[in-house]
Image 1 (tube, rainbow, N blue to C red):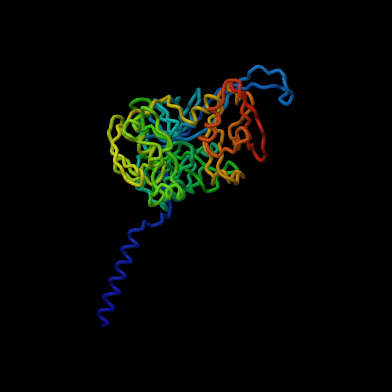
Image 2: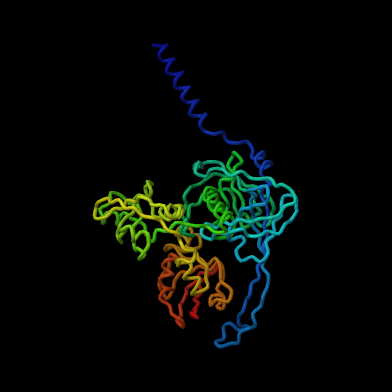
Length: 449
């Protein structure tokens, strides 16, 4: 009996040691990773020419307008070297609209950079410099292998402080922030601040697993919530930018919405999953394949669709001309359809493009959890991330960072909701916007040209 108990104890200890060996040890220091990779991180400075116009007496109706004034705006960001001959990855928003882009290396040498290609939908840009020597390169890892709880290290230039290193863990994966149709962010508590944008996020194998892109806070500084674009997404985009200068995406031609528990129950679906088809574009691949309004797409090309945001990413990544199998839930039955994916036209109308064209605003949806940090307690909102030069929005002094709460007295929680209001406007019409600016609120009326 004693021998048997000793045997069981030995087995238990062996299993425990095996389980403990599976977990990677907490590193004592990240210094070796920094020594290996810090030289692959660059400082990016940009210059934009901004034109401002307005009245010297903005509160007096009919006051004369001042002559347009131009001034230069300088901004800083980060980037990472991905090839020894000078290809550099950064964020789209770091270089968007820049007339001059300069890249400074670890040894303080500086080069002008040209834009090889940029993709607003994923916030990725590819730059090229012509170095006089071979450059150190950061190897690209596999972001699909990242697990929540894994250590990550961010290197960048926050607030202009060159080559700042911060560390933390992966807080979550697959975060959807409402910034675009292809949201799939890594969330991390590694400190990411303004100026980190475009810089690399490394794993403890010293591989790039993400590109730092966003923070959310009420103060403008880090509060332990940062986001990075998965490097596997970046790889696909960079390959296309390098080969074509733009990103070619697949197009299905449906408008989808979330399947809530109530919707799942009313449609007879076993649980909330899939993407509910709210509309089908006439003549689109979906239309040709027989997709109908009210279908719930539950599987695409062999991959189950759990949430609506998974479908646009899968479709976009599908090679144009490929015929894929798609399963839809219709009339309480599963039907199999075959759809041939076409190319998404660069000029395809999106909610964002409609708002930009009519109002001159570049906007993004603020997720309710993020909106709450700005004092908005009753759902999401729409944040202004850019104002187009010469637009009605610029003339009425709408600023980047303004948050749109209402449009024509209607509560607005998403870009799509704002676009529905804007689509109804005609030349000469006005739209009344309620904005949250800093700690207060302001109404602004825009007249459509």
